[in-house]
Length: 267
Ligand SMILES: [Cu+2]
Image (cartoon, rainbow, N blue to C red; front, side, top):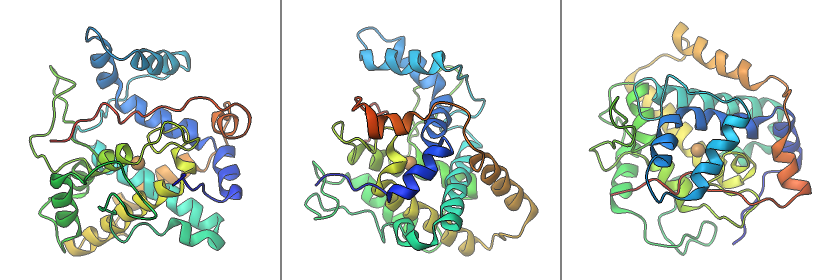
């Protein structure tokens, strides 16, 4: 089934805020070491060089918070929650597009979310753990890292992975439903925010995070929670000053999308 797009008014609004480019930059800068380590390997996929050259040409730099390192987990959760908040505020009539999966569909022949192969058994366990009442994870950061990524870089090895095989359902799901031929390829951060399935996935994550915080007794009125959320809401609410790549790719030139999650491996 072809990917469903978000309502056009929402796509136009997100494009106006430059969210496609921002989302791409946010993820790339946090995978800076990862991409450069892959590019250093002999015989690597030439797409990797294109991804790096593209980023460097835009002046993007390395983030001190690399994906999978401490601090990145809660960043990931807050940034996406800020996007939900802004879309909910601006598009109350489209609230159901932001609802999220009840649970990620695991059946490859699911009519709405078909997938090419059987659901990974470690990822099945990850879903069980996440949906359990109080997952045995310490805090927002540990929770975010568990959901986001299997990467756990060390100073010597940017490609080191988390020994816990149940980490990274987020990256797994992006890769599972990526479609190189889709103009809103779930694997391509430049355009995947215009894909309805992106919000189903992140809606599930955001809801589970909310449940986690409640089970832990964390207080959403706490100053550190509020200031982090406000930081991201303000960042994401600025109007874009740069080129709207998303509009270009959606409406003018059918450029090839890419799957940045294709290099993830799940045990
Ligand atoms: Cu995502």
